[in-house]
Image (cartoon, rainbow, N blue to C red):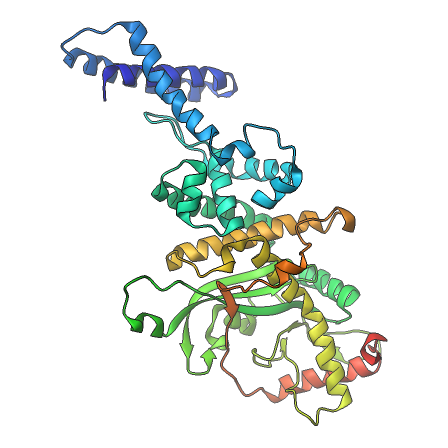
Length: 436
């Protein structure tokens, strides 16, 4: 590097520091002074090696113009939509990054400390741009090349920004949108299911999806015959938010994955999730356990219910039970429909590595919960994120598909629990809708 450029960068760093120095602690100010002195000494050594003399005016103005040109280059990209100009068309703003201005600013304040890069020699890509690149990649489902062209950033840089920012979003938001499971929290969620979906003692709907990776070009056919797949297992609350998620590489058996051996299955068996003990729904009623509502793919256990097998001779009480558990599971279908249509990275197979695919999925789910928590506190007419058009419902979701789970013989206790819920729905817990 030329001494003139080094001096200009040092000068710019000094000016930037002057703007924030008054907000720093004395120790931070002294550390920055020492850094600037060390850089200046390095500049003096570089200058000493140069044979010809140069004028100071040229040494300051020309390199700074190069740095400012980098800033202007970023401003001319899609970054200008959010940062450098006040949005006028709020509908386009939302379509671009899936959130309004206020929500974006709140999110940026949370993740900025994690994604902001310090200026040293090369002018870094601003934190705003990093967040917008990541949000646009998740929202649009466009390729890295397309995002690179839109933001005037190198293709490999976009890939690194997306991965790092997704990890930052997870680190910052996971504790906010995934509160630690507790008995009181599960009971609160069970109350929501009872009031909104008429399913007592239900603490969530459980669902599993496969994250599909794109087959690399020019690979052998046995690449597709691997016996492992990335599986997302999620518990969804009554408001279509994800309560718990587990994403891992699972072994696929002949009839599907082994749910009992998965992390979620193990946690349910040893009650790591701190599920409340069985209790009575009324003074005269039986004690019922708190349960998850699963579909026909899941095994039947004491804490996980599934519908009765659909046969032609299914009696009316069993049909009522199937209706009630299917109704309770609508929140799960709604959650995945909103997630996969607002974050269209799920519309196609993932071209990322397995580890990066997991990071992207975790970040998208965190953003979903972050936005849904705000959405559920607004009047219906002011909601935007959770509303889908008819065209949104017709998309073929290639990156997040259903996964088969190996069948297991249910225990006698599990059958008894399901029958108790069946009897409840036909007696004290009956509702008008199930008879219409």
